[in-house]
Length: 169
Image (cartoon, rainbow, N blue to C red):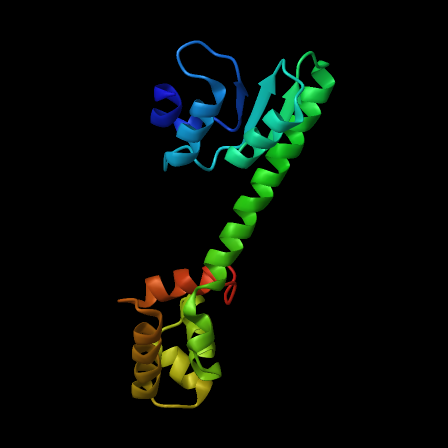
């Protein structure tokens, strides 16, 4: 458990036997789920006891799957793949949620247009010429963008816009 908590980034999945020396599988699973560094890891419980109640307990505690021994290796591998697929999909969904929280929607159409030109590396003067406005108007748009996005400069604004897919990198 110590190695898992210290180097959780090295692990993609945990295969956990219910019957282990020192600490049983249930307590280990509870510890994994309580630890900030390991709670995201998918866990498959392994047991020699084929009792529905114990399987239900394991799943309620936080196991992602439950396999009764003896099992054939292709079955274990297929279940590991399925759990990992769900885990990867969940990470993708979480990333989509994070991206959707970027406050790009607060920007007006003109501000978005300015931000897209900034992302292309255009100067305030070039942007002003293309928009048929004065350079001070572009600066006003930029200040409004910085305020709305809570950023300090053009680079930070463009990075947020890229995260929200407003501009392509």
